[in-house]
Image (tube, rainbow, N blue to C red):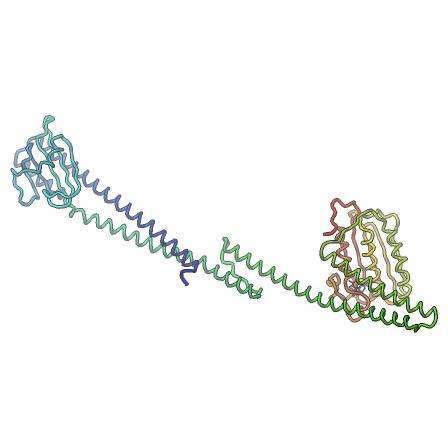
Length: 481
Ligand SMILES: Nc1ncnc2c1ncn2[C@@H]1O[C@H](COP(=O)(O)OP(=O)(O)O)[C@@H](O)[C@H]1O
Ligand SMILES: [Mg+2]
């Protein structure tokens, strides 16, 4: 479980990094401190060695020399040896078993002979064990007449060095603890939201689109959480839309099958009747043939609507745009729909002045739009009612086209949906008339002409459909969107 989790990895990486850096840093720092300490210590000894050497150079009495040497020993906490030119001890202090007249090992004297001050750090058997040895020549009239040896044993320094090392070690330890704790917090701060998001994503994969992750920060992790929430909202919406469309599609297939069955049954029945010579005279035969024609036209209408809607669905609608006169279009429609209006006992009024500016559009498509609206109005208006097609110049160079009826109206609750494909207000009653595709086609065609279409309706009073169309020549072809 540890090997795989991000929290562990982040934590281990940062901790390892901190350990390495701190160890290296600790070594360097303690080394630096040690060197600095030795340097200070040797400077200290050299300074006092020189002082002593200059005192000796002045040729003090034996008694005075002895006092100075004892003083130096106590003050410096060091072993002090004063030798003459030959390397024989003249005076010493703090040296067990050493007497004046003894010989200092020649290697120690060599640099002295050349008048140089020497500092040695290490082991010296003569002075006893590890330590710091400083030798200062005594110079009289530019001649080396002896030397002062000051020896500070390491044991005197270890206390300080140990204390220094301890401080360094403690600092490293505390820093390390802090770094590890911080790394732990950091890794947890990162891994907790990641775990939450992982779980949410798994939930979403299982189909639960209600999940939301808390947004804990404004950084990249917070943004990721936001994106995840956004994704789940979008997916949810898409799924709902899909379900709705799927439901409509199913209903549509059922409707289409139903729509197809009745005309096909009629066609079959009437054709068989003619073949069996059921109609006895020419007039009866004609009547039969008229029914056949009617039903064929209904089938054709249905198939055309289906083709239109698939074309629109696939974005393949192509508009043949050219300037056209709305008055001509209205006249043609009046002629076409006059029979239906008469049959229904509805008066059809057309009020489209010929002075209107031309509009640019696809004539057949726009005719289809207005036809659909008039057809709906006539079908939903009882006998004695009135349907009016009117057009006026609107503001901003638009043309306002209205189709108004005094019919049954549309319930307010249905109004937003009548533009949806396959939507019918009264499924039982209008089932035989249409497919619920008409207004969906209307809206898409109007929008492809850069126009808008609205509806107002009062139940029992009538409906008013309004189309706004631009009159100017289109700058870009929006067709087939
Ligand atoms: N002028 C109108 N008066 C009353 N209801 C209407 C009118 N126009 C459309 N509707 C309602 O809107 C629905 C959708 O219309 P439409 O898309 O043309 O489908 P269809 O005419 O094939 O039923 C119709 O079924 C009808 O219920
Ligand atoms: Mg219709």
